[in-house]
Image (tube, rainbow, N blue to C red; front, top):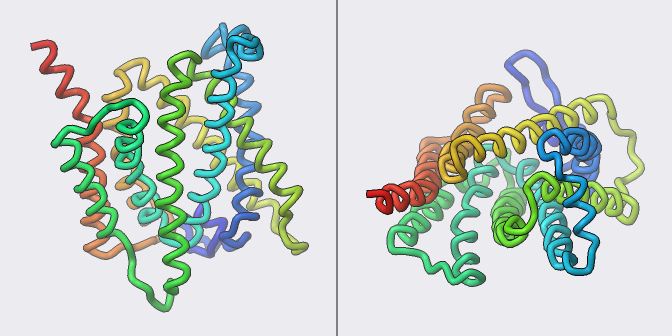
Length: 300
């Protein structure tokens, strides 16, 4: 996705990128193109993943299930907002840093869970939250000839803001998934994102410039496939090893993102930023592993 926004030497061989500007209109376009693939794919596999998906989806339109439908639609709106903000962040600052700042969302999720569910954070959780925020601060780059202060500020705000919105998404999803299976829930979220991106492009179209559609479609298709595979593998992983263990594995995302960005498009980060990424990754792992410790204590 980063390559679509700015020119990079991919795999040290091909000079590609810079097809769209890192702004809201471009985010809407890329989101729309991406979801054009993901939504039909999810619909085609929904009945294989969950045979009762059609029946459960129809039940949402009954009066007694409207509250669940509204919660699912709200989650779709939140998904649209956090993806749009994250795209802007990735377009303006290095991918690994944008994703690390986004992955500070467990801090905001814990605070929102305290607010809405009364789940007061333990002392251990408070300490881990401080660790995650401290690691996020370490990753913030300084202004330079490559990144102006305005660009950095916008990218940082977009990345952190995306994490905050995602935290709200997680809280609303927790309430909704208590009554709705993950397969129809995910499809509704994706469909809302597709529709909102399309409507946004109608009311806020891109400037009348000639776009290079071929690489945009290739990038969107690859992004859509990766997104679909990621969501599917996450659901399969949760079913096989449980949500807590799956989330611990997912905690490696910031470090893996930075590593992949370095290997594919030669994005570099300094020692302090590497330390910040490691600290955030460790903090997320500790926060996710708290549930495992609790379950082990309850069994003993």
